[in-house]
Amino acid sequence: MDDFGLEKLAKEIVVARFKGIADAPAGAGAVARQIVVKAVTGTKQSPRDSVTAVCRGLMSGMLILEKDLPATAVALLKQMEAVAVETNQDPAELMTWSMEAIASVARLSGKDSCYAIEAAIELSFMGAGPVFAAACETAGSAS
Image 1 (cartoon, rainbow, N blue to C red):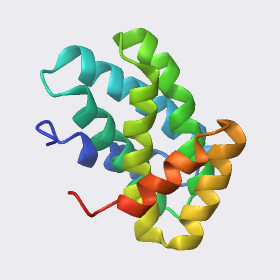
Image 2: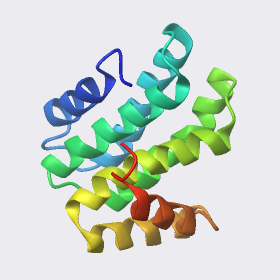
Image 3: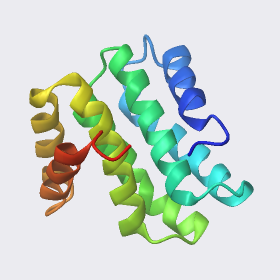
Image 4: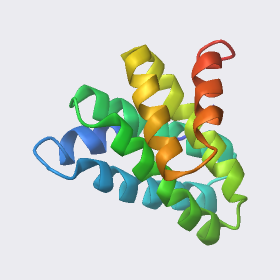
């Protein structure tokens, strides 16, 4: 449950700031880090809810702008290690929660998008591709 409207906030930030930006995926990753750290350390919302809301919002905004979703997914995931350090959270859990949120948006954009994101994740995070593929298979079924 996104008690603080983080998903909407993240989507609005992306749409407002990254429309004409060439390296929008890296920018989205930086925004993810900032929002998630503040949400986890400054609210009583569960870290899982905060991470999934922010990542889903950022990916949705990038989908609206027709930006590079695989690059955005990788940029978001790369920030989770820094988020883990800053928030004292388990990086594996942060990555899993992020992938679940990314999968929900990837699934909306079609199977080809899921495959492209899976390949990009596997290339950057060896062994994480199948985790993402499983998240794509279950995305939307337990919401």
